[in-house]
Length: 246
Image 1 (spheres, rainbow, N blue to C red):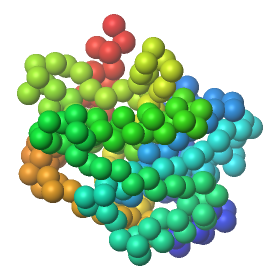
Image 2: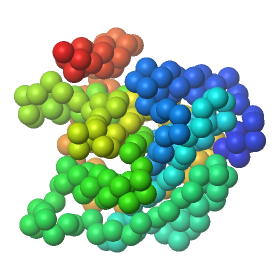
Image 3: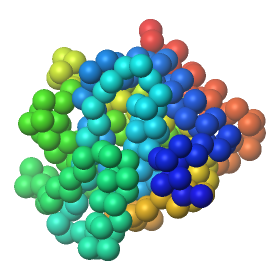
Image 4: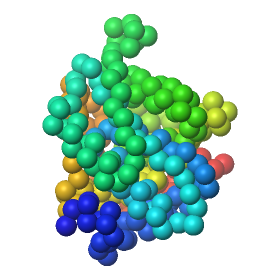
């Protein structure tokens, strides 16, 4: 089966478990409410594509109504191929989610010649904020998962001396815009397995720092920690929550 079968109503047990877990996370943090407008930040990777499918299917089951729009920032310096463009448009057409690709420069003039993963992420977020404001949208959904959360936690601890991480629901500009992360309690391995089974049209964005950035060096550390206890990632996640809730 593939994602088209799912959209037509075929939901195998493993996928139902994933949808329920995602819904539980959304409800835990009251991420999406009646008449909300949600902008999906699409990277082309497995995470954001599966998140889009989950929110599309969930919308059919709930008694509440919310609006979904999807946007992909395509870096002019490292663009995706025309073939990949066509695959993504077909995917979101199947999900009945309006989808646009925005062409932007990766290297902002404000960087003053500097560039790293943090600046790239900040630039992407700035563009998403601008698009959301133009469209009158106050919620941006990103595909960050549990492993992203743990990696960020370790980076902040080791490199900044700060016990902090990304939040499931994070507000900006005094609450005018919220970034929500419905997959933040789901492991990356689960997302990868489902994306492969459903043959999602995953697009591997070109990144010159993909194999040399700090996060790529943290990944094997997280993998090693997970061998100590099957719930090690969840324990770290809950520990961060206790600090954030103080």
